[in-house]
Length: 348
Image (cartoon, rainbow, N blue to C red):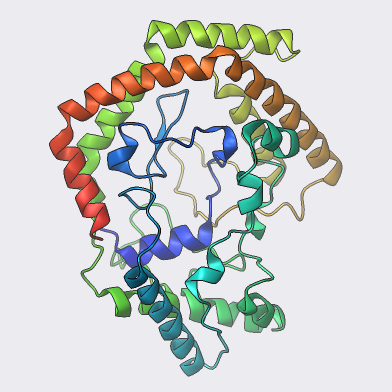
């Protein structure tokens, strides 16, 4: 199914980090790997489980051009005009004002300092509050409304599937027999489409399925390299010496914290073979048992600090060496596909 830039921009910008994956945090290297040159700055080769995450924008770490900024301003102006016509106040916010995210300072910390304060950033940061930015005048406008008016405001701004956190709900499955495959994203979505056009940004990700599968296979080859296997074993021994025995894979501590948080918030995945589950954005911690959440946060920080120290003793260097070797070979073999992906993402 094709997904327009409208859907991609609105869902990713509003929903933040999502509800099923922990934020990557500051434990990733900032320099770009050979594959990231094509997949974008947000590309992450995750050490463990053969997983990877793709950037929402390809093409390097360049600052937005004046043309980009001008279009973003037009989107804000068009959103404000649409909201006014719908009977709501909305202040067009210059893109420069949104440059710093709510948790930007936290994720700019050095890896060891981040681990000491936030662990992995899983239970220690309430991502449902990411959209609750008091520096944005529209946050204040929305908060002044009654609960009923807030729902109407959300619907007008982001469409009927918006929720109170500013996230857009995405139904699992095929969206039903009457689904057209395109979300109604309200005034914001209309504004993006108005500025960028109906066809601008159409990306059929399915045509890159083969490339994505090859990248997944690449991650597994990296994991199975004997140098990484030996480094993982040394990391596990280090974790045991630090009082955290039993971990076999480097993603295990992070996954354990995520699972414990999911149990606290009730954010459990649907059973195998069960009906698709609606994604509503990051779960709120407001109704979570405070004492249990406090205990989980202490455990997360302890684990993350030990994890970061043990990886720094040799695992990180070993993994990066193998990763870069394997990715360089992969790029040489898949250059045409990677260039096609990079070009399509850059032009969307």
